[in-house]
Length: 154
Image (cartoon, rainbow, N blue to C red; front, side, top):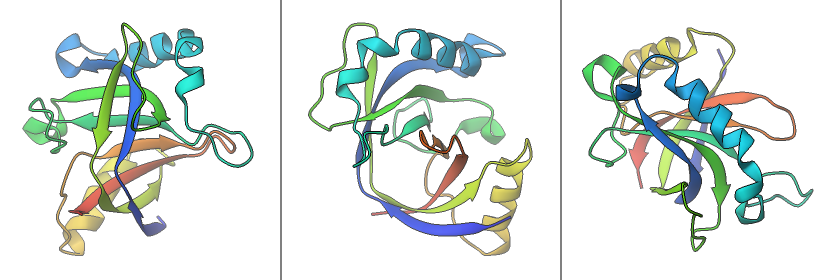
């Protein structure tokens, strides 16, 4: 498992919000809805120099919306399926905007169902704190997915 250290300044995500209280499969349902309605937010998406989406994010938070890790052994919390957008953008009706604080992260390529557990184990083995909720990033160009483990809020 390759671990990379990176810093991501504050950023905004506009997406469809749900929670673990919505039942099994809620994340897939959020992505299905966000993808089906993408045209409503496409103009708000940040883009890189090549015109690709700057980021497709599954961002998470505890129920207090403090961006702390999910509670009850990472089994309960909020999830926002969306795209990175300008900080001053306003979400259309039915969409939610979260502003994610700046963190130093350990980034891990999501290469299987045990990636989260291996990332948590890595943090423990290296005596690094989990300083916030873990986020999932998908690169629009490559389609590769990464988990971002926050270790220090900046």
